[in-house]
Length: 258
Length: 331
Image (cartoon, rainbow over all chains, first blue to last red; front, top):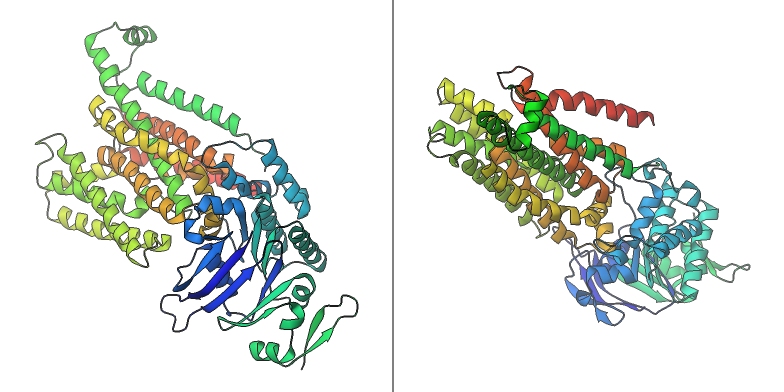
C-alpha cells in the first residue's frame, strides 16, 4: 500500500508559523520509511495529516492512489494501523480487551468476534511479548509495556500499512530491537511502515528511506547514507555532530560532539 | 480481570424483575396474597384494581424507563466526555428542566393543564442542550468535550440562578411545590406518561446500545478512536444529542433524580468492566431496577407521607457505591 502526501501544510489555530509547511513524501509499498527531526519539527503533525485527523491548509494525501477524502474511516482503519505517541484510557481496561479493539474496524457495529479475530489478537500479543500480561489492567503497566500493547493492537488490525509515532520511545534495548525487527520483517512481507523516531542510528540501520524534518519543512529525504550528512544534521538539530559508518552494520552512525 | 458478564446479567435481570414485582405488590395500601393474585387475574375489588393496575403498575414501568434511561445516558456521557464525574445532569439538562418547571409552578399554571409542567420542563431541558451544544460546537467546528463539560456546568449554574430568582419572588406553597418537584417523584405516573416516555426512551436507548463499540474507542481517546474506524465528530454529536434527549424525557416527567446516572454506571463498570456492549444494557437494567426500588422506599418508609425519591437514591446509592469502590480498590 502506497502512502503519498503532496505539498502538505498544516497550521494550528493561533499559531504564527505552520507546523508543517509544503512537505511532500512518497512511501512505496513494502518499505520501512523513517521520519526524523527535532522536537516540534512536525513529525506527529505529519502523521495526523496523513491520517486525516488535522485539517490541511494546502496539499493532498493519497492512500493506495485514492484521495484520503474518498476513504471511509472504517475502510481506512482496516487498511492502516496507527499508534499514537500517547494514549490514556478513561477507565480501567484489560490488555487483551485493548488489543482486541484492533479488530473493531473489521467487525463493524454489531458482529461478534470469531475464531480468526481471536487468533489474530493472540498472535499480535505474542509478537509484541505482551501475551503473559493479557489479563492485567493496562493502567498497571509500565510505559514500555503499554507501548507494546498498543503496537499489538495495531498488528491485530491486520493492516497493509503501519504508521507509528515514536513506538520505541520508552522501550528497553531488547524490546526496542524486537519491535524494530518486527517492523523490518513486516516491511519485508509487503506492509508499508512509516516510523516516526528520535533514534537516528537505529533508523539508519533499519529503514529503507529517511525523511528529515526541520521546523515543519523538509530538510532532507533519501537513503540513510544520503540523509546522514554532518552539515545537514547539524543545521537541523543545532548541534555539532560527526557521522561515522558502523563497521558491524554498515549503516551510518551519528556521534554528537561536545 | 476475570469477569462473568453472563452471571452479572442474569442476577441483574432477576433483581430488576423482583424489584418490579415488589413495586407492584407493596405500597401504602396493603393487599393479602389472595387479593393481589385475583387482581392480577382480572378480578378483585374495582378500587383495588385501580390501585394496582392504574397507579402502581404504570409507576413501576415509568421507574424502569426513567431509571434505565438515566443510567444509560450516564454511561454514555462518561465515555463520551472521558470523565468519571459526567452524568446526565452535568450538561445542564436538569437545570434547564427545573427552570422550566419552576416557571410554570410560579405562574400558577401547573394545575391548568396536565402537560404544562412536563412540557415546560422538557422545553427547558431542550434549551439547555441547545445552549451547551451551541457553545461547544462553535469553536473550530469540532466538538471539544472539555468545552461541552464546562459549558454544561456553566449553563446549569445560570439556570440555578434563574430558579433562585423565581423562588425568591414566590410564596411559600409554590416554593414547597418547586422544591419537591426538583427532588423528583414518580407520583405523576400514568399509562399516558409511560407511553410518552417510552416513545423517547426505547428507540433512543436501542440506538445508544448500538454505539457500544464507538464508545469503547472514544473512552480510549479521540485520535485512536478515529484510527480504529470511528467517525469521531459524528459519534460525539449524535451520542450527545440522543443521550441528552433520553435524560430530558425522564427529567421532564419525574423531576430531578440525582445519583442514578452517576452511580449506577460506575457500580456496573466495577463489576463487569468497561466494555460498553455489556456495560450499557446492564446499566439500563440496574438503573431501572434501582429506581423502582427507590420509589418503593419513597412510598412506604414514611407512609402515608411520600418522600422525594432523590433522597432514597442518594441514601442508598452513596454507601453502596462506596462499598463497591472499596472492594475494587482491594482487588
